[in-house]
Length: 121
Image 1 (cartoon, rainbow, N blue to C red):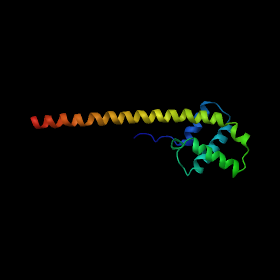
Image 2 (image 1 turned 45 degrees about the vertical axis):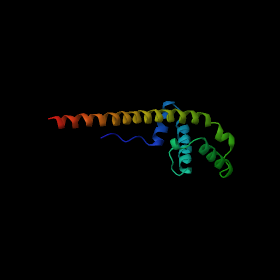
Image 3 (image 1 turned 135 degrees about the vertical axis):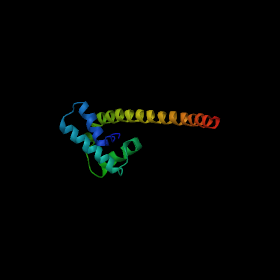
Image 4 (image 1 turned 45 degrees about the horizontal axis):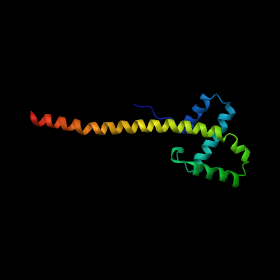
């Protein structure tokens, strides 16, 4: 049985720990990552882009009165962290797709060979 893939927040936590950030920073990043996902009705960040990030930041500034400096200071680090993780996930997705294409390409020819062998005997 294959192990279940890690949940998004666990992946974020692992990435933060790899960078040896302080525990309080980890908690803060996880809090904001969770709020971002919940704001967009549990959509996965891979499905979202710059538009959704802007919407969320605008919501925080207008509705929640979150100060711009407090929001923007860690933004570059968070963005780099998320971009690195997205690249890993996209590479993994592409490997899976290529394996699927390769297997579906081989399967019909293998079936044809087996059926031709069965009719010849």
